[in-house]
Every structure is written in C-alpha cells, then in structure tokens.
Image (cartoon, rainbow, N blue to C red; front, side, top):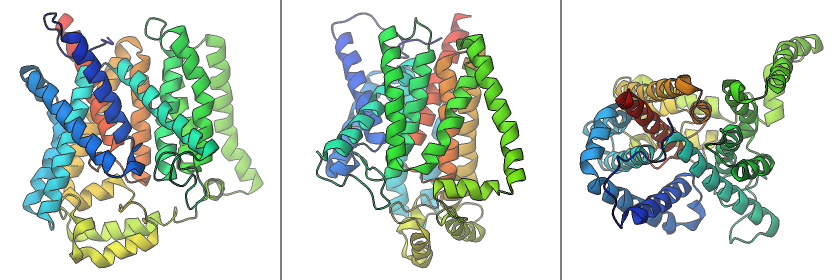
Length: 422
C-alpha cells in the first residue's frame, strides 16, 4: 500500500529526475519552516514560506487536472480553511481574518500536495530526518553556543534553534514516534542502515526533550510510544511483546492502588512532577476568558484570529497575557480558539478533519497492519492532546495542522489506489 509517489505516473522525460529532486527539497523546506526551525532567523522564515508557496503552486499548476481530482476527494481537508475564509463576513477584524485565512488555505494546499506526492512511509522518513536535523542543531547550540541567540529560555529549558522550549520538546516527540516506527518497519521499507540510524537517534531525541524542560512533551513520550508499540505488536517478537505488555498492565493496575495506600493525590503528584500548579500554569484562567467570549458569540465567533487583533477585546487580551500566554497569544486550547474565531461551523469542520484522518489511518492500518499508519495514529493522538493544552491546530503555518492534513491526504490516496486496483 505504501507507494513511493502519489502523483500519477507520466511518460518518461528528461525532467522527471529534476522534479523528483525539486519536490524532495521543497518537502524538506516545508517541514523545517512549519516545525518552527527558522523562527530565530526573522524575515528569512517569511521568505522561505514564500518560496514554499511558489514551489507548491507551480507544481499544482503543472499537475492541475490530477490535483483537482485530489481536492474533490478531500473536501473535508479544505472545510476548516473555507470556514475561516467565510468568517471574514462577520469578523471584528476583516482584513486580519482574510490574511490569516489565506495563509491557512495555502497551508492546506501545501499539506495536500505533500500527502498526494508521498506515501505515509516516505512522509515518515522525511519527517524523521528533518526533525532529527533540528534536534542535532539544537544540541550543537547547547554544547557550543554557536548561534547568535540564547541557549536557554527564561524558565531554564533548552531553546536550541527554536524560539521557545516547547517548540523543541513538542517537535521532538514526533521524532521519537518516527524513530520507533522506522525501527519497526519491514525490511522492504527500511534498510538495516536506516534502522540503525533511527535506533541511535532515539536516545538523542529523548535527551533533547529532557533538556528542553517541556514537561508536557516528557509526559507524552510514554503514551505516544506505547500506542505505537501496541498497534505494532505483530512486528515485535512475541516474548518481548508479552513481557512488555505484562509489565505495562501490572504497573497500570498497581500504580493507582499504591498511590491510594500511600495517601497521595495522583493529580497533585503529576502536577508536582511536571512543575505545574493546579491552574496548569494559568491555563484554567485563560480558558475562563475564552469561555466568556464564546458565551457572548456562541454561533459564529468573532472572526478567524480577530480576537487577538481587535482593540474591542483589549481588556480580555491583557487578562490572558497576565494569566500566562506571554509568548504566544492563544487560549491554549484548540476547541476554545476555534469557537472564539469561527464558532460552531469551524469546530464541526475541524472535528470532521480529525475524524476522517483517524478513520483513513485505521483503514490503512487494518488492511495490512501498516506501521506507517500506526505511527500516523500515534502522531494524531499527540496532535490532539498537545492542542488541547497548547497554541496549535487552528493557526495558519502550523506544523500540527499541516501534519494532520498531510496524513489525511496520504492515507486517502493509499485507499484510493487500493480500490482502483481491486
């Protein structure tokens, strides 16, 4: 099911090798800029996005009949951007909503192109190498201070080549999932050398996450890796799988029981271990502000991204800022953010995208136990959990929404091709 290229084959021509290299370089650039690896470079990041825009639009133009068919098969992928575009009609900041919605629409087109051009397995490998490059450069900065910006953030976590410690930690979690998946891939899909690279990289990535002090990322490593391993038990020797599963079940069963006997509150233990307070570093206060805006505009919201750019909401913006959203203006919850911006239509569109992505990945996984689809399901779970606590899955130029749309499209193309052959 994992085809190396999702664009329909064309007659051989001297330019085919060129376009293959062009697409590969474009994909690497897209992953790097969407993963926030270039945020410290200022205007260069915007220039790279423009290059990605131009490259993808060129490729879409050269393959328009095929891409039009692709869009007709993936209307749900475009639903959320279209709702955001429509919100310009009722937005409190029409120009800001329009600009953001256009960028979001381009993000969707880029993600669809990637999912169309590359299979789940190829996307997995590209993601691994791009994220590993970010981790290695971050550790280089940690060891040498080679780049002209701070090594550590205000809270003491490693920044590396990123602007925030959470950027490093969150992106590295996907690197962990990708590395484990590559190790579990069949020999026909990944060479022994690639598996060795992934195996050696795994502790390096985890080390970078620990240095980042992004505790949400640290906490997510076991469940993300555990879900992938559970889905891929058929790829693990039976004795190893049985032993690991038995230990996991025993610890899961005895953990809460032991805490109860010790008189320890599990919630307090988790909060203390992750350095959070009962407000989740101010998130509960921020959510209250978001809830009040939703109560005032329950159906259509105030327009995509309009809340953060409108003087009308200056007082509420200040409350959110002082509650903890100092680096990224956000309600740190994608459901609230979408309801505030685009109301019920936006939330339904996003839930439809998430539901379709999960269904397609499960369908590909169910057909032949695809490790790549299992990795996609693990990553999708991480996307949702992180977005419930962070500033993702609603913004334009965001890796998590780009990854979700690319996974949805790529899995859909695998299914489409399988049906065409049957």
